[in-house]
Structures are given as structure tokens and as C-alpha cells.
Image 1: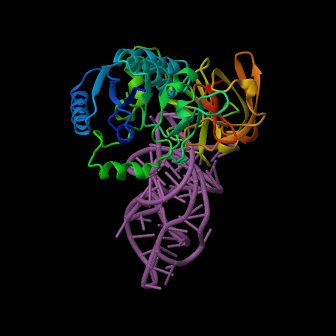
Image 2: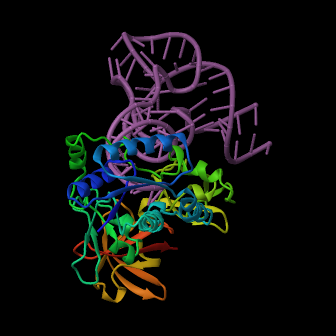
Image 3: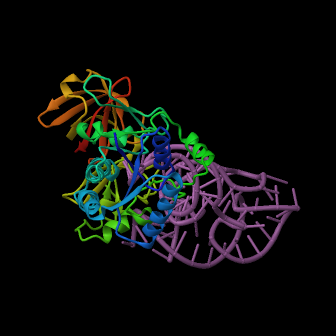
Amino acid sequence: MSIAVALSGGADSLLALCLLHEQGHGPVAVHASFLAPSAREDRLQEELSRVCTQLGVPLHCVDVHQEFKHLVIQPFVQAYARGLTPNPCSWCNRRIKFGIMLQAAEALGLSRVATGHYAQLHRDCPSPPGLFRGQDRNKDQSYFLALVGREELQKADFPLAQWTKDRVRSELAARGLQPATSRESQEICFIPDNDYRSFLAAQDVSLSGPGDIVDTDGRILGRHQGLHGYTLGQRRGLGIAHSEPLYVLDKDMDENVLVVGPGWQLQATSCRVGRINALVEVPDWPERIWIQTNYRQTAGPARVQVWGKELGVFFEQLRPPAPPGQIAVFYSDSGRVLGGGEIHA
RNA sequence: UGGGGUGUAGCCAAGUGGUAAGGCAACGGGUUUUGGUCCCGUCAUUCGGAGGUUCGAAUCCUUCCACCCCAG
């Protein structure tokens, strides 16, 4: 009955709040600050307070920056130190938005949490809840929600499921509302200037130093500045003049060597996925599923095999390999999220 | 020191008299709630230096310089 709306400051969650309010759900806005207190955060809260007053909706601000640090930032840093390429947004959705924030909402007597995600939730389907791609395929964010547990998704709500991005702004304008933050949320929210390498260097963690860049024959082509600064499939930043573009093919953490090669060598036939979050029990998955390993990537057909706690995924066609640490999401033909997990080596 | 070769942007490189291709790298921008990818744009008034021939030279001539290879 009572529902919390996770209000970030952006346009999407604001419209989600408006919609629930207008539909008579009597929502309560909950804003969680992920970062340590700052003047910027204070201003944001003032803005949100003003907007909520204008709407006539109560606002609660909760400080989750300690939890965010332990559950998102530190795993992010540790993953990079181990040579992985983490996806903090996916874990944030699981652990913070539909973890800590959901708990905070429940503590306030609210039983559900709505967000501004572009994804659809169907409760009337086999083994509910059914998480589906958003109506706006260009803005679909189901990818980032694939790690959220079934129990938590039962308590979720995505009011923008049927919406398209361009309508959101005009609808807000029609209501005389302006998002508190003008910029869309993009890039890693806890990293200034979008410079994750500098951020890592400032952390209390040991990272590998410079080393050789070699081709698949072992010829030394250049130097790298620490393997954490590179990810599988990366092209830019290698600084190697060659007859054709070179991409990162492998990170050898033991030898501290970066292996590069031309684009045609960047092809994979399979991958291993662990830490599976199954939204549909794996035995109930269709024989042929669609795997997506990046937010903006067309999913490709594949078959899966259960290997203990992992899934072996076999692609029908060659696809670019996904870096270990990234999130693989499995879809059905109809765009239902069957589950997600973390890419292993 | 003889003999041969080469010198075009950060790297590779086309261009042999008609007014400097292309690739890579780099940089800038676009797309994007991760990292990346991808797309678009910018990037030599100048061809090792100096003279000369010519209406006109990176391209021909002279000379100097640098580097490489083979002889010694």
C-alpha cells in the first residue's frame, strides 16, 4: 500500500514520484545520500525539499554513505586491484537501492520502493515477479537490475516502465517542475571527473605498476601504466602506433603484462558466469537464451550449461569477450530477465 | 676513408614537375547510470638544411648535414 520513491535528484525519479502521487498512491519521497556530507549534497537536499513541498509529498533523507562505501566502493576498488573490471551500478541496485534503501523504507513503515528505472515488472506471469525490458528499448535499464533478488523485486515498482525518455522532460515541464540536478546521471557517481584511474591511485590499495605491452607472439610493443587502468577490449589509451588499431586481449596479472592485438582477435565463443541471481529458476530457462554483457549491446543468442555454481554460456555466434567482473544478463525471447551474474575469467 | 642506401606530422607511409593520400597514435566532441566499445571532428602553408633551374619543385641540379648497410 504505502510506497517509497527513491528520489535521486534527476528527472526520472522525479517524474516517477509525480506519477505515483497523481495516481493517488500517497508516495513518500526518500532521498539517500551515497557520499559523505558536502555542501553540494546539502544544496541538493534543499532543492528536493522545495520540490517535494511544491508537490505536497513528504521527504525523508537518509545517509547511507557508510553502507555505500562498504557495499559498493570498496568492492569496486578491490575488484580493480585483482584485475577485474567491476560494474558498480549493478551492485548498487542490488545492495543499496533494493537493499539498504528498501530496509530504510520499511523502517519508515513503507512496504515498497519505486525508482525511475526504465524497466517493466509483471506480477501476473509464471514465477513472478517478471522483470522485463523497458518499453523504450533505447533507454531500457533492465540490464542494471538483473542482480536484484526476487524477494526485493516483489517490493519494487518502476512507474516509468512504459515511458520514453523524451516524454519525461516534457511531462515535467508541463507540471512546472525542474529536476534538482540538470545533468543526467552517467559515469560512476562516486568518482570525480570520470577519472577512475586517479580515484584508484588515491585509495589504500596495492595496484600493479608499469609493465610491458606485448602482442600474442610476445613481442614488446610498449609500456602500460598499471593493469588496473585497462580493460579487455579497450582500444584507446594504449599509445601504440601500429598499422591497425590494437585492443586489449588479455591482462596477465602474474607477469604484469598487457596483451594486445588487432580487432579480429577479439572474438569469444563462450564465457563463464558466476554469482548467479536467478529470477527464473535455471532449469526453467528456455534452451536458447539471449546474453547481454553490456548496458548498450545487442543481446546474442546462446545456450547455457550448469557447472556447479557457475553457468557455462555458449554463444551461437562469435561475440566480443566481456571483461571478468562485468555483469552478464540473460533474457528470454520476450525480453524477460531470466537472471544475471558476474563474468568470470 | 671508399662503395651503396635513406631522410615527408609523435610512429608507419603514398606521392618522381602542377600546387602534401591513407593508417596508427594523440586530442576534442557525440552516444551512455559501470569499465569499455562505437560514431563524428581536429591534426605538415610544408616534405633534413641551404642555394639553383622553372610560370610552377617534396619531386630536377649543386652543396652541406644526419642516420643505416657493405667493404676496411
